[in-house]
Image (cartoon, rainbow over all chains, first blue to last red; front, side):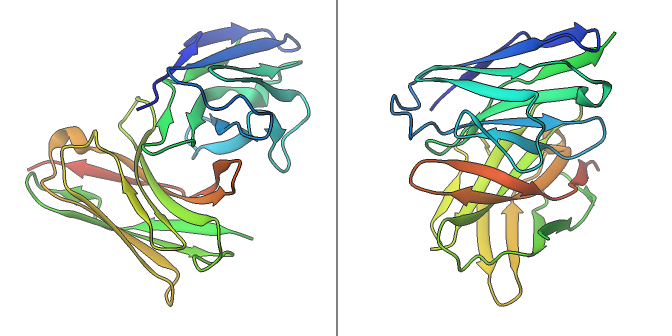
Amino acid sequence: DIVLTQSPLSLSVTPGESVSISCRCSESLGQSAQHHYLDWYLQKPGQSPEVLIYLASTRASGVPDRFSGSGSGTDFTLRISRVEAEDVGVYYCMQALQTPFTFGQGTNLEIK
Amino acid sequence: QITLRESGPTLVKPTQTLTLTCTFSGFSLNTGGVGVGWIRQPPGKALEWLALIYWNDDKRYSPYVKNSLTISKDTSKDQVVFTMTNMDPVDTATYYCAHLVSTMTTGYFQDWGQGILVTVSS
């Protein structure tokens, strides 16, 4: 089964800063640019998770372009440019290449 | 507009079987590439994937959960039913159902229900 390891596990940032969250997979999710079963979700306080990024780098509908995803193989990154107060919450990566689907431990983003 | 809503008991006793229903609208489980999954989240902890049913009735389960899991669909009612046997206090969590979009190149949970908090206690 594929284990996902996120880092860092917590972030405290000033509005306007840019941050990156890493997600490393224990197995490759595919080398082809067409096949990256890696998603990013944000769970805002008290809410259900919502998808931000799928196919490693495709923004879901309605997601601001401040959010971007990159990576391939075993290493993936979520980047948030110009962090805003509404971005607080826990960010999770998830692999959907094979079942059992697995999530990272989550990265808690706070605003200073 | 796609919506999903979880329903079922919010309190179960240890050893009992939990049965949850996901009622959805805005998509069809008869459409190729569509699935409905169940994910749980213990208080203050991370998300954990439990089960998934695809449009073609292919069913997948987490091997990490000690309980026996069952997932089924009723496309005439736009519902997915999930059962988990032999509940234990460690199974206390918010249980979410979610709409999966899958293709040959990707898969992601596009829409989520609000979740239902299930407490296991005698």
